Length: 159
Image 1 (tube, rainbow, N blue to C red):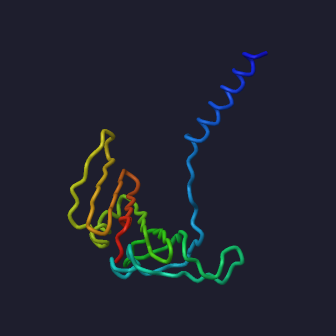
Image 2: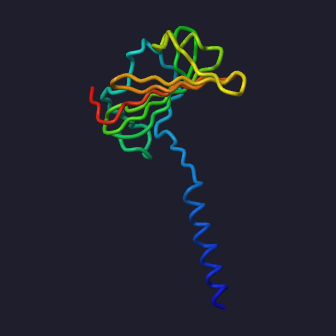
Image 3: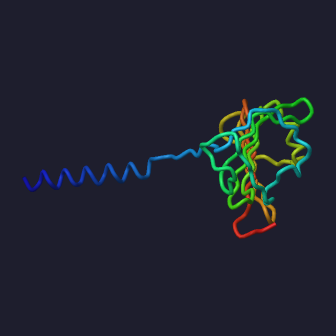
């Protein structure tokens, strides 16, 4: 009886331990814009700007959101269409993510990445780029199908 209790407790604590380490949480956007949006230049809603989104057409989200994620589905730069996500905390944009197709690599120049020295991976067609400035960190990941650019504000830096 005593060994069964030990075995049961060991199995319980082991499963709780694996459950806590193996769980991945993906945060979904609170606001999802599908209408088309024109991307003016690389200064449009950049990392570090203060912003306050107003959402009055749904009762699920409070009318003024100081913290959250906004996803723009149809962003246009001339004729090219791509998607963007903004994460903001206390009305400051802390992260901007660009979702591009692999054939849209020319857009990298338009958003401010003219010269990239990328690191190739062991798998053909995959590459990464990591860059940093005083105020912002950038990670770009590309493969045969898509390119994802993530710009994040450095902690403790205020624009």
